[in-house]
Each structure stands twice: as structure tokens, then as C-alpha cells.
Image 1 (cartoon, rainbow, N blue to C red):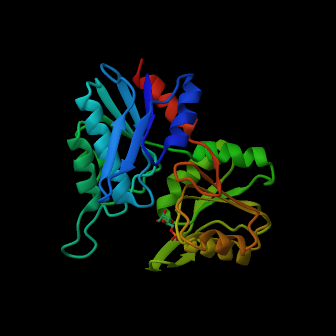
Image 2 (image 1 turned 90 degrees about the vertical axis):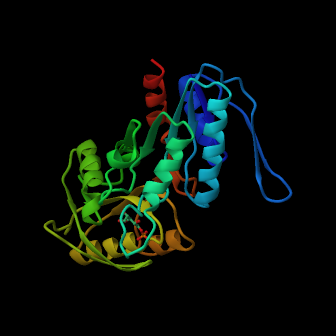
Length: 296
Ligand code: R5P
């Protein structure tokens, strides 16, 4: 079992290694004066199954390139297998040509990740539900894990909500709302969302009424916070009581967290797929479990 964190995910890789009772591999990464990346693997990886953890979130082009250098180097140094753990998989949202001539970024990124000898890919709550199916772009095993049960466990531990209604703010969030509701042994529903611009959305309720109920809102990503703020406004309009918010990937554009907190929600939590001030839940156990299985 060999685990190493790329520059974006070293703390997460250390936590995963800790869960497994091993020490994470070491890297030297710096820049040449002209801005090019220098990377050196400081561990012996010959004949090892190497699990690389590198989230591709803010500055995605840079972090993707670091992953490519790292994976290719591992294979070159004699690694038997390279398993990519990409907790946040940037570009997954551009999985469709919305306007003629647009790049199908998800397809391109998937191609290059495979081209450097990646043997298997794991990601977490990937935002990819439209035209391109992951099986259409990956020739290698691909797994989309979910952090929702871990987030729901944390919400339960906080113990502030009584029999909460779980709400996904749009139709795509249904699978996450369902997972969280199952863990909390409660009911769920989703809203209908129309995107009016990069930071502007409109949210309408569907079946459920949150009147007099505590509510947990769950989503994969919080970026500008617009979706969550609109969902909270609808819930307040219905007469909801306490509201908590949980997301897997706290991308958090500047001002997003403040905007959400101003609505009066009790807590906003996220995971460490993307390091942030609200990354209070670690996905390390989820990743460690898969590393363990893949090395059996
Ligand atoms: C989109 O459908 C995603 O699931 C999230 O709802 C979205 O990315 C959140 O973005 P924002 O925080 O900018 O509203």
C-alpha cells in the first residue's frame, strides 16, 4: 500500500495514510524561475500499487498538470499500478456542448488523465449527470463515491435538528438528498432550480412543505452560494425552523459564506475535498477504505 498526496492534497493524504497506519510518500515540488513546474518523487515506488490523491479544484489547470506529472513519473519509476483519487474533479460540469463550438472539457480532461498511465479513478460526488456518461469517456475502472453519509453523520453528531426534512436545491441533488435522508432515517425532497446567470438562480418548491420542520439542505458544490441562499429563502417563506447546510465540495467563491450566513442558517459544513474554513468533515476514511480494497 503506497499513498501519496499531490501538492493540492497533502494534508488529506496524510490523514488517509494515518487511517491505514502507514506514512504517506514524499515529494519535492517547486517552480523553476521561468514558472515551469519541477517535481521529484522522494520515495521508492517500484512494484507498488500507488494511490495518488490530488483534488483538482481552484487553479484547476495547474493542479491537473501536477497530477499528470506525478502519475507519469510514478509509472516511469516502475509503479505497478497508479490509482487516482481526485476528490474534486474540475471540468466535470462541462460535459455537454451547451453552445455550438464549445470544448467538451470533461472529455478532454478524462482523456489526458488516462493517457499518463492511470489505471483506475476514484472521485467523490462528481457533478456529472448530463449527456456524457463517465463510461463513455473512461476505458479504465471509474468510481464515483459519495461523502453524503459522512456529512449526515456529522449533522447527527451536532444534534441540533429534530427529524429534519432533507432538501436538495435542484433535481440533480436528488441522489445526495436521498443518501443523507437514508442515513438520518427521515424524508427528503428536491426543489426546482433555473439558472439565470453565473451567480443568479431561481428556486421553486416541489411537493414538500417545510412549515414547522427543521431542514438540512444538501448539495455537491457551494460556489457563489446563490443556490443555497435561494433555497433558504424558500424554506423561510414556508415557515421552516432550524436550517443547516452541508455540501461535499466547499468551493466558496469570495463572499459566498458570508452571504449564506446572513440568511440566519445554523451551520454550513463541507468536507476537505476542497480545503476551506468549513471543511470540518474529512473524506479520509472513505478514501482509505478504497485504498485498502484495491491493495487486497
Ligand atoms: C449545480 O447544479 C450544483 O449542484 C450546485 O448547486 C451549484 O454548483 C452551486 O453553485 P452556486 O453556489 O454558485 O449557486
